[in-house]
Length: 246
Image (cartoon, rainbow, N blue to C red; front, side, top):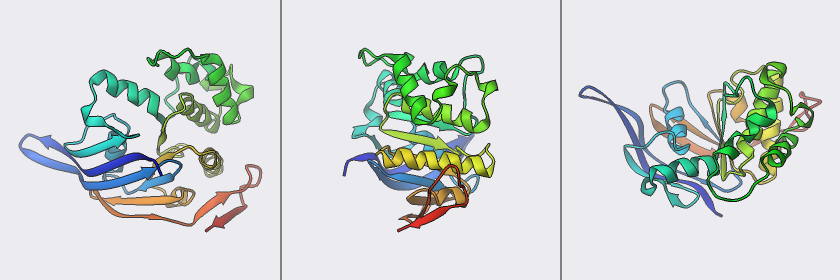
């Protein structure tokens, strides 16, 4: 199966004067196309640093990182930015929506930075992405007119619009109540069922249980990495019903 993420002996150190502060220590990891993976760990475990490197927002001190078969270290700065826009869809805890622009315009944003040279109908692609997340009736609403769950759905639509190799979601339910969190995890499950590769960072065990594989980190090290039984959300209308899938 095609590897979307491949990491070999990754190290990330920060420096405070002459003091070396290790954030990530010798991590190996692979994520195949179509997987749904969570990275868990307490604050300071290194999970967000690892996510930033995977998302091409930071660079490792040592080691190799291949994204969709490409060695990230060999990319020029322009290639680096281009790959980040084309191959990675980001979803953040705080949504990161522009407050005075509509849902449609927020979702169109990644297409404005697309330098592939392909002709694309930004409005059509954005509307299709909003339809996939159940927001066809909210395209002209600005963020202040949307609930927290709807804002996160707009953010997920924005992550989808460029048809990325992987969606990276950093604490995507951190600002949501429990009922809305289940809605969002159901949406991620539905998208994964369509073949979309998803990696989320979370400190919440109950959220990680909705994914198909969990990587657990502590003190910058990967303690374990294993597939798991996962909770399949059966219905957005009945949040009490969930079934364990082998």
